[in-house]
Image 1 (cartoon, rainbow, N blue to C red):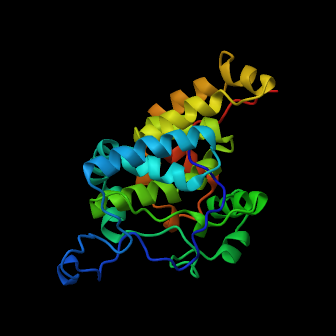
Image 2: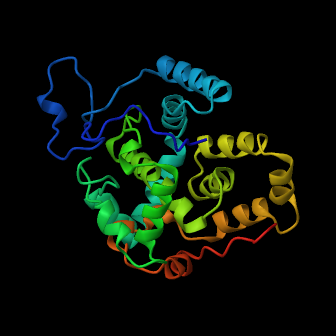
Length: 258
């Protein structure tokens, strides 16, 4: 259910995680655990989860509601995903260093001009081409605020920021990527988005989606068999050929359906 539309988030907004942030130095009554944190009690969390879920159904382009739904329903899946990262050497490095997939201007390390100059067929060039084709920016991803645990907040932020890179390694549409991410992450928002998104496909798309050996079968098989993309340090491998990235992550070539 993740939308690729630009949000109202502006480059330079407070990061979800800040190593210099000390909750013990906050004024009395301020229970934030990281700079952008918005603590919720149980009732507020349930209300926001239900309300944002309904809003997503009515207006699937509302990225603010999609973000809220993902954050208020994903704690169990985020804990499992964090454990998977801790069990993986590169995942542990990502959790320790907490890189951000944002431009330099937005507080990250990505130089889009440099990525555009990389050879065709490289990971970084494919990512930059994808962003340019659809007019997206890494800085348009909303900052996590409703996840209480700071480490889980980063896991959700990381998932959110590699979403467009999952498109880059897959080159298929949103519904297929959502099914892939549903199996990769277990996040309820991904399962819900994949199922409801499939109901909006046009007849020709539906045939290619449901046919034997079609996109649905590909997404389910690849999502369950591939290594976790959240454990891949994309920022260190922009020069790597995309074919090698797919091979390393065990992401098979998508079907070529007419």
